[in-house]
Length: 377
Image (cartoon, rainbow, N blue to C red):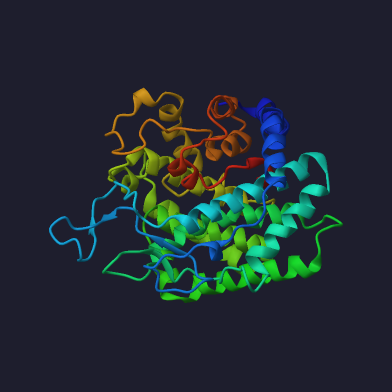
């Protein structure tokens, strides 16, 4: 790790260096986004959903028909995704995130107002238009046929809305950001925060002791930053310091709960990315979660340094291989980029730079919470 003035100078240049790496991809993706018309969850429904046209619906990934009773409740096969699940709502939400993330990134580096104008069309469709909007709750996410019409665990599906919220933050100062759109968008996210913090599903997810609990904090922090909810931002900081880090990180910086899963590598990467985004979202001059340490020395620095060697060279991974998608990881993980800035570590940046910044595998895209890192600086 670099030290002293050298570390500071390198950290200060991270954003400029990241722009150089990503500029061509950003412009290409933004040109694609400009050609896209809005598609929301109202475009397709599942007959298995207990909700209505405006209610997001998904199904538990690792649940399958019972071969001994095909008409009965689904049974679990941990780590193995059922390809027959209803995924249409997830896919259009990911598409929405990609569109807004691309447009916001291009606007940030060029100042071109056409990106904002097109983003407004999509924001209106998802959050304002009564015919196509999504209701601000997740009552029917990760349902299991014959068992549950929805579960708190499904709240993780809306990590895809984080880059929508952050994209709005980046674009909200534009002369073309209409208050008739901006205000309802913020109201939608405020309503969703209220649901996440008051409904039993939201409370269950908040108290989850693995990556689901991490992702609850990450999402709420992102949405609260958009809405200006200072009380909730402070709550998320407290949650990180007093619950997530103490409960999930081992002395060596690893995540034991993720390492016990059938996909330990992918889950470890995912949880580190999520914790890193919490630090990136919530850190400021007054609160620096990147430098926060528990009394025994556990910290984000230790977490990144634990996993980085296995990202740099996956062949060194000492634990079991993931039962699915082993070959598709790693990619350009945001944890490395933002840790490079926070700790002035050029090696982290170099590792981030050489991996895929635009993955195509659906499972990887779904489990990469941030795909447009420039809007998060």
